[in-house]
Image (cartoon, rainbow, N blue to C red; front, side, top):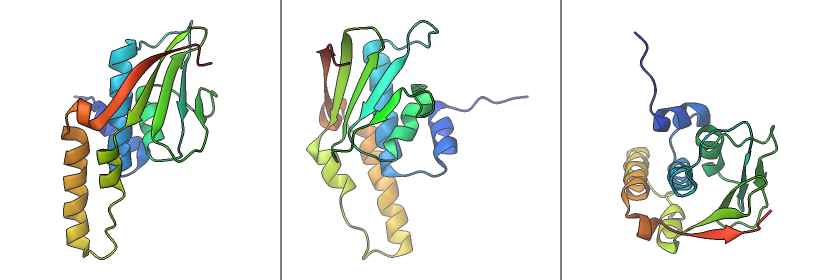
Length: 147
């Protein structure tokens, strides 16, 4: 019997480990799927633009099928957790910006913690990111003529 992996398990397997920024990317990718009603299509290609290099973009590769190789995953380094999703040839897109509260949680230093404390902090941060209300997690808005 074959057991299909959940989207979360697929993302973690692709990325290689669990971390807060992969959880962030997982949520962003899911919001984009819902808001743009993303469906794989051979006629149009989803273009994803990220404004920071982070683990989050691995979730887009798995869930949104945007990859560097296919040139539909672009990164313009501005050190901002802002992500834009748009189908090629379409005028409407979606911009998702991560909230300050979430970013503040990501930037908390854990250098002074013991290994066990770091593991506990990681689990708490993952729960915080994955369990926060969407309005507290990010803002998103439809955009026109981004590409």
